Image (cartoon, one colour):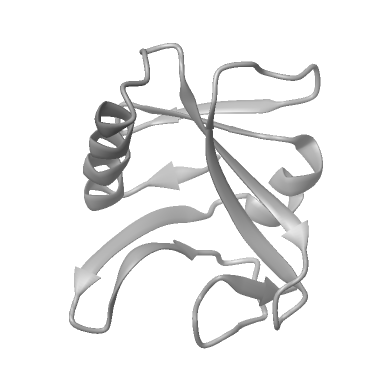
Length: 108
């Protein structure tokens, strides 16, 4: 399962509304090679699922990931911060052995 916090949910809804996306769009979460720790998170809106996609719904948000990314994202929570230390999405990933200072990449 992939989870989403209340603050992240509100920000996702706001971004969808600002982009004038319809309800058939969902949040695609993925992992790609790169970044200073070896793996990076990827977030995007999408409206087409692929055959091996893993589909979850948490806190009223549909989250979709490919099977390979799910191996790294299992039990991860998407968070959003708007505090003094920076604004943006970040992941609380129990599978990560380390992450970089910016929070956009990790290693397992």
